[in-house]
Length: 602
Image 1 (cartoon, helix red, strand yellow):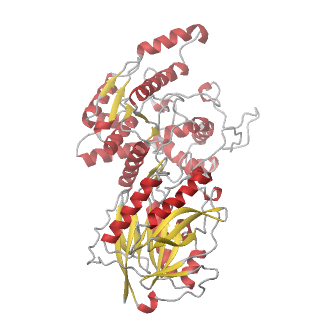
Image 2 (cartoon, rainbow, N blue to C red):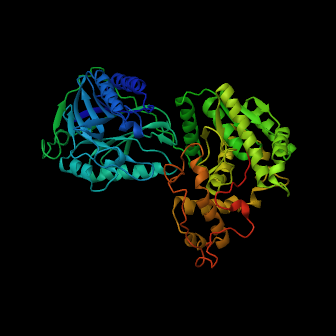
Image 3 (cartoon, rainbow, N blue to C red):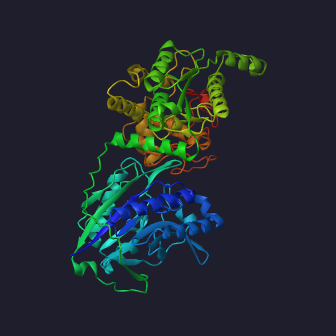
């Protein structure tokens, strides 16, 4: 029997922080060496962070990455390492994996399968690789792959591993999180292991990068697709596993050495600190709500910290969205780094003011009170000669939201606090928000969280706390923007348990409106929801980024033109008026294209 001690270094790099990432990788190599590892595998593009986007178009950035790789190589005395980095070869840029050992670069693998769907845009930046790489450590063959390479059935990576009978397939990955992704990921990896009859060493990135969250969960699978070792999710980790192989399997020679599949490299680990393996604790299984919660925490923490902020500010309305946003911010950053602000208007009830104060006290954060009644009156007095006769309308409702946005941004400017906006995915989808009002801020914590899930997460937080951290009255009160007397969300929208399934079908599953209506939804309701979604793209384009937790989030995942007259009919042909079946009911002026529908401010 031959054995190889393998370490998977699940790290949280920062895009563009080459010096910091070199230190993180060097620390990972040292930790793997201390654990007696022969080989340590890092995530995809770990050296520069993922995704580097248009930094890859800057020649100086690419040159600096190459110098940083040389710095990493100096730390590989007595241990082999696989490190993801952007490589420039003959004028082409590749998503690459460096084979490092004996303090130098020994070989480079170029990713073959370049994803170009969803959040991925790799064909914009990278040239497709053409050759696989296999190397040996202590006589055990290791085939190198990067992320998408093993997601494709019958692809080059599978063919290479099968043809050359690779003992281990190492996969450097940057697989972003969405709810349910883990099950799909494990299914793909297990299928690859069974088809190639190889051990699979999968190292995934962890951390937040703008809208994306990488959840880690690195693992080693045996040739039957069964997990040998699994890392925790949503945190950095070093996963160590011993691979035992019969000698004939470990040393199976490649059928092509210097041809299509690239060269074979032999390394011998001189690691003399091998010790008895200490079994890694089993990774904690997370429920759906727990993993979404962890993703929101990690995404918020990293966005704030990696962008150089210390404190954040949240407008508390006394409603469920701002309550959940504040609770996540406190858990992610600490109560000392969150400031709450309540900004009551003419229409703010005593119940919501009381709930905002109770929530702030429960979370242990300071609460600033800045009434906006006098400010709103000043605005209305100034506008009165120009608005003409008639009762106050949507402009008065939106003014309240915009005043609140101005006040929060003033505090941000004064003290350097990052404003966290509080809108959820349901409201963002249909434009039930105020441009330059409640959309004003730096980070939208829950903008990919549907309203029904907002309630579930709030209940989960209370359950974990063992008390009503978020007051029960916030959970039970009907949602309201409180921008006019006796206002409820259902005055303008379907109930959220109806709205959210329609949105999921239309936004995430790309179903046609008539197909959605065919699933038992009222055609008029579907027509109105679809039209609101289509006409609100301009608002979403101007909103801050937030944590992606669904399979298709607005922004990176879903990119539609703002100027767009395509409309899919529901229940019949376009109307004779030419306005189309998705036009609003007569007199519904607030719903006109580019009109600014109102919503709660914070």
